[in-house]
Amino acid sequence: MPVRINPSILAADFANFETELGRITSADLVHVDVMDNHFVPNLTFGLPMVERLLQVTELPMDVHLMIENPERWAQGYAEAGAFSVTFHAEATADPVGVARHLREIGARAGLAVKPGTPIEPYLELLEEFDQLLVMTVEPGFGGQSFMPETMPKLSKARAAVRASGLDIWLQVDGGVTLDTIEIAAAAGADTFVAGSSVFGAADPDAAIAGLREIASATPHVH
Ligand code: DX5
Ligand code: ZN
Image (cartoon, rainbow, N blue to C red; front, side, top):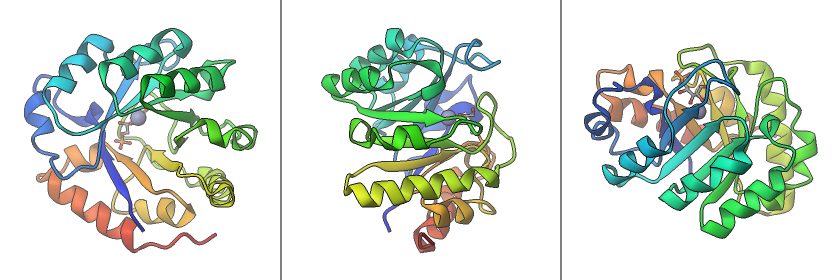
């Protein structure tokens, strides 16, 4: 099964992003967490930083917007050249409108759900999205523990995607390590965000290879 490993630069050295990006050359995409201190109780950076990061990496960028009002802000990231822009279902009353706008600009449109948010309502809108992100921690901070109780949502999403025949990536984000990636892969994930377990390793590219090996060898159980 093809899998994607997307290291999160939330766990990188914020004073040396260009160098840090050079340590993950085997990544499939680079995951960039935008936080506004309103949707989540933490603040990272916004569009000017993402525009600059895009200039110093050839990796496609997987932007994760943990912000309120994605109707206002999401399109800027697509226009800047992000490969994928994922926003939160809890942050907007019009996820379909936001997704359509992103796709018009040429980005893949992703929809994220927090651990307590049901996924069923969104499985009826599958054709509007290119990626679903099932958060496996409460969004806001790196280094938290993987929440296995979110896995039934992933299995439901995998079943719906399979039934649809659409090419929709199923992403997990939070607490993904060598010890937990198999659980997420078995439940149906094919795209894995990993912050601490990649940038906390002595050799981030080797950590990516280790994660990839386990995920690739794990069949979906449903
Ligand atoms: C958390 C972020 C994650 C974070 C994951 O809200 O969305 O992308 O970087 O970090 P780890 O892999 O350390 O749990
Ligand atoms: Zn993230």
